[in-house]
Image 1 (tube, rainbow, N blue to C red):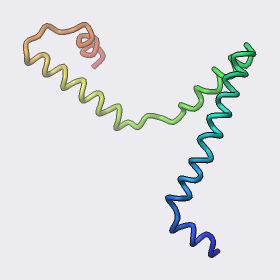
Image 2 (image 1 turned 60 degrees about the vertical axis):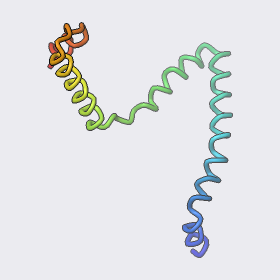
Image 3 (image 1 turned 90 degrees about the horizontal axis):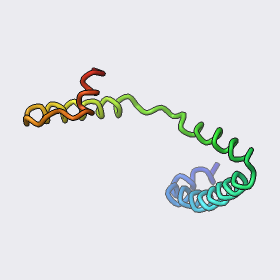
Image 4 (image 1 turned 180 degrees about the vertical axis):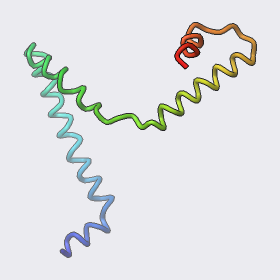
Length: 96
């Protein structure tokens, strides 16, 4: 138990050591996976099928809401300035 309590005081160093060991290992594994996929056509399909699964983490709704708000503000500013509406602005208005 003393070892675990001592690791708490060296938290930054432990994280740095893990990163130094993990990133080169990750680079080597990914480069070998890419070489395998280039040589094997079935491997390329497996590669393309598996890697989109990394993006399963959802985008937080607050981020999309802020983007929508910025788009609406930009449309309001362009309408106030008197510029003719763009095709993108018209599409956004139809969707709202």
